[in-house]
Length: 94
Image 1 (cartoon, rainbow, N blue to C red):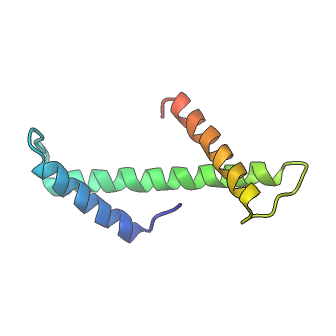
Image 2 (cartoon, rainbow, N blue to C red; image 1 turned 45 degrees about the horizontal axis):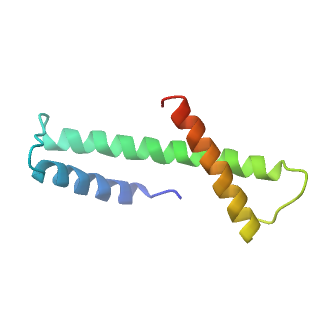
């Protein structure tokens, strides 16, 4: 599920604030720089997740038997394909 840029900005602010207030954690860079790096990581993850979702949808559509999107069967197949895609991503070390 994709998140909007506004939501990513909000999350980056929350994460940066939480990191800064965590005992034992010190932010060596300026807080705004750290927040921007967090934002970039969230947006990159969102982009990568979108690509994986597209690939999962394509794999389901390429099956011999058609499955209607929105059905329980579709949801199960989609979850299975996403699990495989994420496991493959982790296996590559990315």
